[in-house]
Image (cartoon, rainbow, N blue to C red; front, top):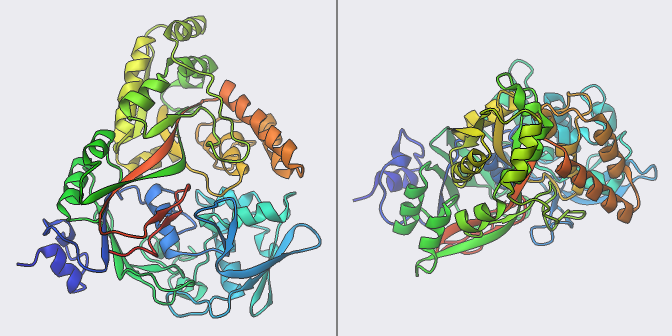
Length: 530
């Protein structure tokens, strides 16, 4: 008897009703990789808007950029859609040669017009990741003046910001700089939205896969793109199956109903290690995890008190969370640049000291039964970390009311600045120190939607210092600048950086060729076989 899942796959009738979520036989179809993970964090699959873990992980399969960070040596950039590039004599421009024969999954050739359209629309849409492109000085009312066609295979990209070509190339390697098919997207524009609504659930890229179907909270189904720049993938397709219960994800991969399981808890990973038909892959990650207090919380004015931030640094049991709770899957890290990044600050000056925290709180008058709501994504390890924080804060006389939610609801609340405090993670968008520095240390006018903006933390002086760092041409001086900025944020900010991740996922033993880099977008399914 063929299971509903297998039948739907073999017949090509994917996503027919709830077939994908029905019980399956202990095997997945040949050539189709089935991955169990929570995908309910997806807000939009438009690369100009998607900024969640699942979307960013998917963009590398669906879209390509002019240049991309090398998976093995991430500080080096590989040519992808661009065959080559040449910096202009003005120091603020690059001319890219588009790879001969490059085409989108639609069959349309990739043209200079597509590059101009993609970068311009991302800036003008001004969704969450647009601030990355804003670092080049591009705004909705000026970006068109900096993008121009040279000839049928060359495009010029210029910028007004005082940054050099190497930094501009890093910016252009971020997922928000993905190149979309102008002709295909333009055919789906509604109400001058640049095709944004259509791209919520469709794709128009040149990556090794294309979206066949997407049903929110059920599955994202990808088909191979035989015309991908760099060659067709080895798989026929991928199914990212939404399985919200980590225990169910463990069971599915153990039984062979899925090929890969992501986001399992520390105990589940430990239980699966050593099983003959499974392998646990441990991947160094640039993800940092942090506690943030919202200064503009509509419900709790105490969260804007710097004494609370200072006390919190001495309340958290960093070692207990890393070693005892998460069993070493995460390491203690207390600065916004992850270890391994140029300019990273690897000192961990804080440890749990409850008496000291109580003294700080008492001096500030915050020792009278303070209660704070803590928002958290309801997937491992975040609820577990939140419970540990709840216990730690209780020792200092603070009640944390943990508010678990599915990721899409969580992100909506955080981006709306409706939270009091939140347990969050952040992964750099490109391999330059400014990627995280601009997120955590720039909010000059409470306008550009950085991480600092999300907490209502207005910091014009630190913003100026961070901007000066990215414009610094001496690499040694620049590294020193980022160390100073991190120390400033570490000492006095609404952020308490706690951990750096080491991602672990479980694969069936017959899955070969899977590669994952440091950053979230560096999930590479193109070379996978099974």
